Length: 255
Ligand SMILES: NC(=O)c1ccc[n+]([C@@H]2O[C@H](COP(=O)([O-])OP(=O)(O)OC[C@H]3O[C@@H](n4cnc5c(N)ncnc54)[C@H](OP(=O)(O)O)[C@@H]3O)[C@@H](O)[C@H]2O)c1
Figure 1 (cartoon, rainbow, N blue to C red):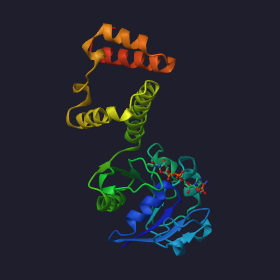
Figure 2 (figure 1 turned 90 degrees about the horizontal axis):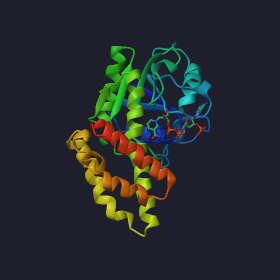
Figure 3 (figure 1 turned 120 degrees about the vertical axis):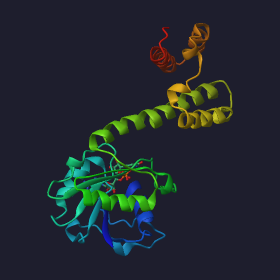
Figure 4 (figure 1 turned 45 degrees about the vertical axis):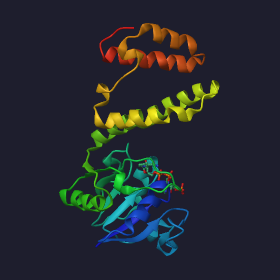
């Protein structure tokens, strides 16, 4: 039985608590957060919570699901012992965890919000550990939550985070621009919903560079010029130009 202490009370800590408490061979022996909050109201798990880090229980695994900036400091406050300490961050090195511990990373690559249910079977886990037996332990735990388990180094994870910003945050900003252009012209944004879904699905079946369509890759200069004249928002115009040029450069055509 792996004894686990969950540290933190935010989005990730709460979802991990709910998911891990039902896993075989895992026993959540305690939750620590400085406000003494229960991680789940439904589970009535308040008895597991301490708000004083000096009262930390002994465990095999401490999961630091706390703000990136607090990982170094809080890990230094966990007493030394025969245990593994992991953080859950996409962008913090394994070395940020105090080196008196055996160290690892248990990064669930998904966007979590507190009140939105998480289906962990669809969440990829990116794992790293300094020692083989620790990696095996977190692999076993992650595999009981999700079939998507990957061994990813700190260097790879840093770039994975950049890639995720492009794939998630930037494409969402593109949807925002599309919606603003629709709103300004009294067009229901939902007309674009099937196109958004088709684009995302296609990027998963074909390599995305093979499914690029539109005026930029066709080198349709007349349409590009017409679009630029139609766009009144200066930011939208700038972004249209930059992305069009990037597509043209990638696919060997000049504006
Ligand atoms: N949210 C996501 O979608 C997501 C996805 C994957 C990975 N992650 C990673 O998971 C970790 C947690 O993210 P989150 O979204 O759960 O954060 P969050 O909801 O903002 O919660 C942050 C938690 O850290 C605690 N904390 C901050 N500074 C602390 C300190 N000095 N000492 C003790 N506790 C401290 C906060 O306590 P207080 O409430 O007392 O301030 C809170 O419990 C981060 O490393 C993040 O990068 C997040």
